[in-house]
Length: 496
Image (tube, rainbow, N blue to C red; front, side, top):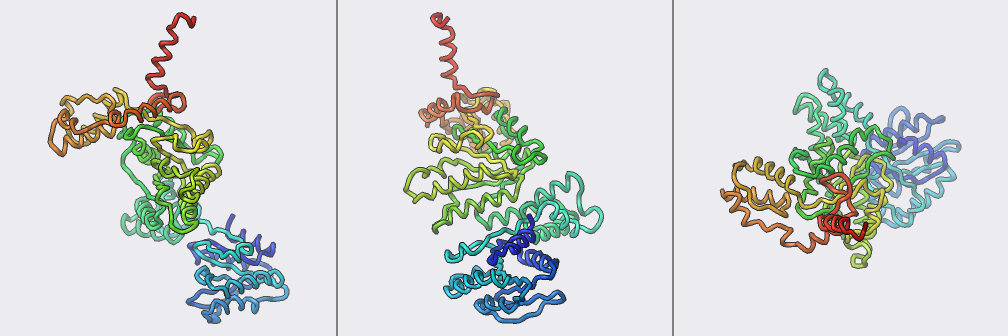
């Protein structure tokens, strides 16, 4: 629903206090002004900001009335009221003045009086910071970011020469890169691409998105050239995710895939898979560090995660990657952090249930027992996969990848690698390269996690057996010990 439609409905219903959250004030003001002019009779509109003061907009040209006093601005709306008309006063960035008790009281009185004389106060601000005295008097609405169609129109206005705007799949890639930008940001990025490349390309838009995310500090944009070919093994997991993400843009929201939870031994490629999935499917990968969202102020942590998830929704279709999530949510159920972890967890669960955007969540963990059971239940994820220590065939594929990556002699003898993870194979190849040693000697500096944390690895494999899908083979994962036990029982004559 457009901003103008929302405003028209609420004003017709005599809501006299409206708060619009927007980073694009000029576009929001244009929509409001056009809405006022289309009414019969036309609604009176005025705007106020600390620099220009009060500006009364007539249908012909705006007239400045001056006055930088915010208190006087609130009282001035009564001068616009008419017996049978509607008057709207838009206060820009007025959240900066709500620390004053006098201004808060004036707003409260004017909103109540506005129901009688049809005077509407609209606060236009980039954030929502409503004092407790005014919470019940304001209705909050959002000025949405531009849709793909609006972005297409902006691109067509910028690229006026033939050949400057791609078509077909090329235009779709440009629009994918532009989703989540404001109108002003998109116009600047399109113009930069024309200057740099002579036509509109996705790369400048991704660069601008990455800069915006760095400024917010809530998410990181990962753009990698590594695809599934750079990962050995995990064939079942690769096929499952790639097939579920195929043609998701044409699906209805309730049919879109939700994501996967990856449980596994450290070093088995969980993080590398999440990053390669984005490149393989042509989606950006957003990294969500829940621990970094913790704020020092009351309510800041909860606000941060809601804002981060809102950004992810705006940038869909995308991959949302949450690494080692059990460490970030380990405080759920305890009172050590005054319930902040529980509230973060609740916000995340609510989003996982209710979001309709094409955001594919890939969460990884090394110890699922530290996660609340409701996190991994059905319909939270499309599947819970266990990434086991790679088998012989997978290890051979990983050796070939890293021997080529580090420019090592592929004909040399490989060290004994039973129980090695992909990370340990990579470490061996990297050490052989930087120390100029054969792989056999470099392997003496690698102690696999299957040795250093043997008990934990065994416990993890036992827990996953029968509970998780296998990342290597289709179907449920079964650990080797359970498989041997089943075979032994089946051969027992007493069972016949």
